[in-house]
Image (cartoon, rainbow, N blue to C red; front, side, top):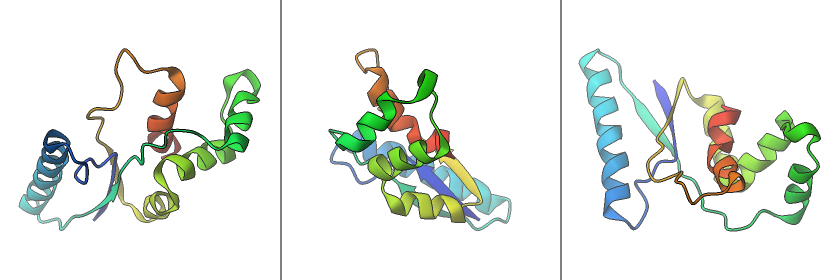
Length: 122
């Protein structure tokens, strides 16, 4: 079974981030193995883009009634997670969103949309 782990924090500097994703991945693979299922987890870390490219930002601003088209959401995913995440999504049997450290009271709607772009697309 191929599992895409969205917002895999295993590669970050912070030990808490690494441990959160590491333990989650270990628990998933252990539980599935107990059920006789071999699992391979594909990481899809959020890339922490600090700014949107100007064309994408203008497309987001011009979205009618705040709606995101499939193409616009895909462009946002490519910007925030990279093309490899979209390729992995197409291969995945299962998708898991690991929300650790992503949204808090200080975040604006654009940052929240950026982190949630791949889960929404999935």
